[in-house]
Each structure stands twice: as C-alpha cells, then as structure tokens.
Length: 263
Image (tube, one colour):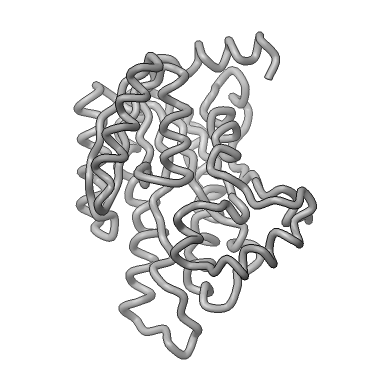
C-alpha cells in the first residue's frame, strides 16, 4: 500500500470503536489484531475455551497502540448478541464499526440427516445473529449519524458449498443478500454495509469440518495454487472500514479466494 494511503488508513481508524464477533480465532482474530494495529479500540467477542488466546491478543493490540477487551457469549441467543453490542458501546462510549464474523457450519450433514433443530442452530448462529447485531447497532449509529457494517459471508453462498454444507451455505447466502438489502435501506442514515466473502481459508474451521485430503484437492483448483490464510482477509476489512478509502462503497460482497471463484 502506498505511504499516503497507509497514513490515511491509520488516521481513519485510530480511536475508532470496532466490535469483531467471533474474534477468538481464525479470520476474526486476524481482523481484530489488524484494527488494533491501526490504533482502533476493539471489542473481541468469542465463544468457547479461548480465554488465553484472546488475552494474548489483547496484549498484542495494546502494545501496538490500540486498545481491546473481550466478551464471551453464545451467539445462538439473540439476547446475547444484543447485549454484546451494548456492552462494547458502553465500554468504549460508542460504536463505529461492526464486523459480523461469528459463525460455524455446526456440522456436515447431508439433507437426509438434517432436522429442524439443526437448521435452527445453523441459522441462529450464522444468519439471525447478523441481523440481530445490525439491529442492535442501529440506534448507536443513528445517534452518531454514521456507521460501518462489515459482514463475513462465504464463497459457498455462491457455489452452494460441498456435500454436507447445504444449510451453512444457505445461511451465508442470507448474509450476502442481507448485506445488499441493508446497504440500500441504511444509506440515507450514513451507514455503509458491505461484506467480505472468503474462499477456502486454512483455519481451525476447516480443521474441524474438512479433511486434509479435501483441502489438498481444493488447493489444486485454485489459480494461485494455495489455500488462503486468515491475514488474507484483513486488508479488505480495513479498506471497507476506512471512509477515506471506501467512503463511496456500499452494498458490495467482495470475494477473497485466490481466483477460486471467477464469475
């Protein structure tokens, strides 16, 4: 990035309040660290036994000149989602940027194995939590007369994913469509809404839900001949959060996949 753009990015993001949901590992963790390195105040939401890793991340952010604190919550609960947004705004005195990254495949199930409870779990975590967080942030953004929402979709929202991921893929398609709808709905309130759509990113997500054999086969189909890493997603997130770099960008779902999807 040219020096002038780097300076603009730092000036734009320094002191901004950012909530990163699902910031305990993977893409969310990398994004939280990237914003912290640019002087932002970061609320890191996580779920599960990641306290130590998140604590180390907070130290790293503070040593880089940013600030951070953590919140643990199960985002299958809408009440927990809304409370997380409120707690970040209360802790830092506002909210400038909401990054909806929390999500999971929950499990690989072919259609014959899918029941209503499974659909509820996947959609509550991947779809309902995004809509709830956006809704909860709206009064804060409206009061400030500005705001930025960055949702995390997936390449599977367009490809349909691989066998056993149909419900997850559908939930991510919801995120992509919601992004475009809210961008139109909220533009007159000076709230920009965009999304990043990662391809196959080699994180704990795929360690849990994909075999190494499957990942190797996928890698062979990617023009750049490698799987992505979490840090491949941070530059786009920073760009979308910066008013000086992307102030006229809204309603976009930006693909990050090494050429895995070209259409």
